[in-house]
Length: 381
Ligand SMILES: Cc1cc2nc3c(=O)[nH]c(=O)nc-3n(C[C@H](O)[C@H](O)[C@H](O)COP(=O)(O)OP(=O)(O)OC[C@H]3O[C@@H](n4cnc5c(N)ncnc54)[C@H](O)[C@@H]3O)c2cc1C
Image 1 (cartoon, rainbow, N blue to C red):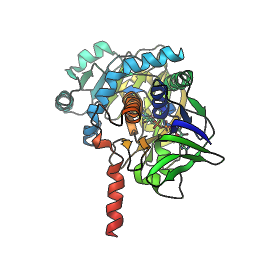
Image 2: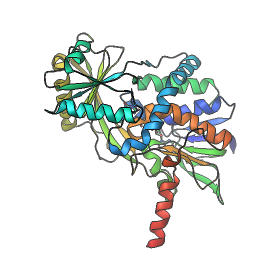
Image 3: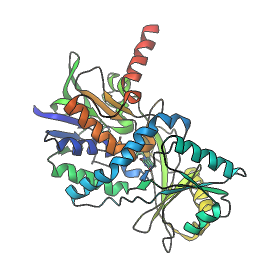
Image 4: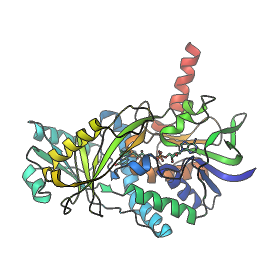
C-alpha cells in the first residue's frame, strides 16, 4: 500500500489549491478524482471574487470571504509563477445596479450593510455609473460601487493550480473514484478506491457537491459533509466589441467580462439533483436579465451554454475543519463562493495539517455542527 502524508478526495479548486499549499511544506500529497481533474463546479463558475453577502444566511461567511480576498493576490501570484500559466486575475471592482422604484433606498441599505461588515461599497448615481459603463440599460435606477472585488477565469485558474501543484510534486490520480475510508478505531488511516487502498496520515474530503455521496454504504460522509447539488446555468456571449470594463450585477443575475472578449452571464439557482441539463427556462431567465442590464447584448453571438453543481449545505455555509475521527478533515460545501474561498481554504488546510490549529476562527464552519445534530436526532428516535 502506497503511503502519503495527505490524501485529498476531489481535484476541484478546493482540493487542488489545498494540495498546492500543502506541497509547499514538502509534504507527500496525493489527490484523487473520479474523472479528469477540475471539470465540475470549479470549471463552471463565473469567477467573481465577492465577499459581499447575497442573503442574511451569508453573514457568518463575510469575514472568511474578506480574508480570502486579501490572500488572493499572493495566492494567484504563487500559482502563476509556479505553473507558468495565467489565471486572468483582475482587481476591477463591481457595479451593482438596482431596478425597483425604490432603487436608491435599496442601494443605500445595501451600501450601509456592506460597510458595516467591512466590505467596501459606495453609493453611485445611475448617471455616474453610466459614465463608467454606458451600456447600462434604461431600467436601472441606482448603483453601488464595490471597489475591492476582483475576478478570475476559473478554467484558467484550474489549469494553473493543477499544473502548479504537479510542479511542487503532488501526485494526481485521475479517473480514480474514492469509495470509502480506512478507519481504525477513532483514527482515519487512509482511503479506498475500487482497486486499491492508500495509506495517509491525513485525509481531506474536497469532493464538492458529491462529498455526501462517497462510500454510500455507510453514512460517514453525509454525517460530516451533508452537501447537495445546487444547479447553476450559464451563458457565454461575444459582443462585436467588448464594452464592459467590470462586473455588472443585480439581484437578478450578473455579467462578467473576460479578457478574451466574452461576457459570461449567469446564473440560475436550482434544486435539480445531479442533473446538469441546460434548460430553456434557465437560459431565458439569464438572457432576460442580461438584456435588461445591457440591451446592446441583443446582437451578441451566443457562444456556449453550460451548467454546474454548486456544493450547497443545510445552512449555506462551508464545512471546514477536523472531525472527531483523527486524521479526517473536511473542506467542502463552498456553495456560491468556492473560487473566492479557495485561497483561504488552502491556507487553513495547511495550518490544520501542519500545526493542528488555524490563524482564523473557523468554529462556525466546523463539520461537527452536523455530526452532533445527527447524533441528537438519533438518540431522540
Ligand atoms: C454556475 C456557477 C457559478 C459560480 N460562480 C462563482 C463565482 O463567481 N465565484 C465563486 O467564488 N464561486 C462560484 N461558484 C461556486 C464554485 O464554483 C464552487 O463553490 C467551487 O467550484 C467548489 O469547488 P470544489 O473543489 O469544492 O468542488 P468541485 O469543483 O465540484 O470539485 C469536486 C471534485 O471532486 C470529484 N469527486 C467527486 N466525488 C469523488 C469521489 N468519490 N472520488 C474522487 N473524486 C470525486 C469531482 O469529480 C470533482 O472534480 C459558482 C458555481 C456555479 C455552478
